[in-house]
Image (tube, rainbow, N blue to C red; front, side, top):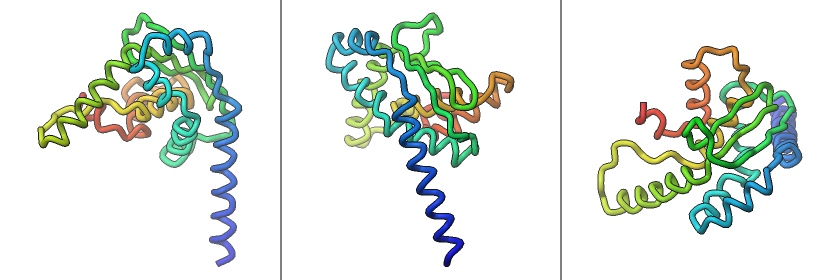
Length: 173
């Protein structure tokens, strides 16, 4: 009765706290964003998916539910460009402070593959490795912003993949 109601109220407060913290703490590189949007429709679609604060807030909620790492801090810088790592995205930080770098050109290609995949599945085709989901990529990279860099790679990547819950990464490995 009473204890359950109090716990639910606390949980709802925490969820609202995450939403408002993410809304305030998500810092987007606007110049970079405009350059990417100018490249075309696929890039625009990808940015709409990647920059939705609800997706980031959902990521923090997943990080808290699965790893218990929410401490009330969210300060994430989001940058765009092509990075030497040749990866679609990259994240680093600690305790909810950090940066996520996004290669929107690579992700626009991923997005096209995801649309093709959806068509293939609809037509009954078997696909071994499903494409990476945009929200899964954000959740994965965001998790890196909550873990310290002192973890071994297998644990760091494993925790990020666990939070993302994206079957692409499992099938890929």
